[in-house]
Image 1 (cartoon, rainbow, N blue to C red):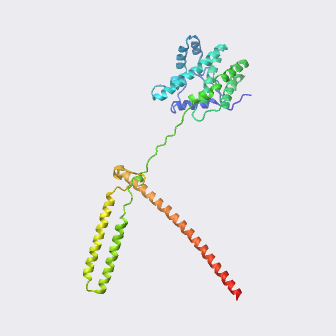
Image 2 (spheres, helix red, strand yellow):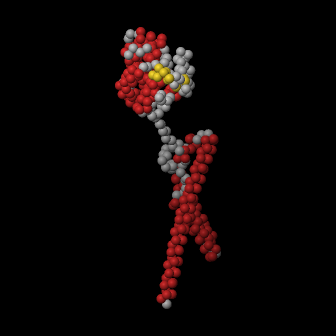
Image 3 (spheres, rainbow, N blue to C red):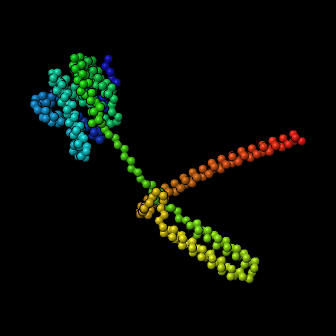
Length: 355
């Protein structure tokens, strides 16, 4: 029975989409691919009879490589122009290795004296298995799955059972092809996957939150606030004494006012010195002023909204934590009170029994 578990046509269609950036180009009329019951048949898919005749007439290997490069459109599949130098070098290496694989397959077909249709079919089978196993994005295909795909395609072209399969290869041909592929391609599948595999790189660009650029809140120093509070308290005491004594109230008021003004001047001087010193947020040294960072009014409004949201969020979390702590404290207090009341009642009961 012919297995239909793997359909490589979908995989190759996916590869074509990635190579053309989402634009799937239509195949020329001479590259026909008959699709019957979701099965693909590969004779004349990549190399037509005239191209195979031309390849067999070429004498040198270098000329064969150059002809196959254009015949199989490898310049589009492995571009070396309009790309960066590293990608061009990688694509050139991949193209040369792929040409080695195709020439090896054609040479094997010539040694076994395959017909043109057999050679074309075998070249397409090897090409499709290679692309699906090595070049599709994502994790590399397992060896067993790749071999199963190759086996499916080979069987579909070895048994005359239309519309599910056609007879291109004989039983002896199938055995020879299987032995050749196991000894050459599948034996080095990991190396093919290493060269042709897609590398996915994740780039992270860390950015500093705009909230860190906000200067820290500027409060008066503790000494200035304490001096101002003490001066105000002394002034109130002097005023009260003056009301009680009556005689020297004016002098005491003047002294209190002078003391308060001196404390305020000291506090203002310390506050000015504190404001003159650079006070930036933690982990944000040498940051420019906020007006230089957010120049437009729209950016400033967005920043104010974001900052307000963060402050409200922090305040909400703080209130929730304080509420949890208060509940835990109340529960503990109730537990202690209940324990103390129970102990007092037990003592009272014990005293009553003694009497």
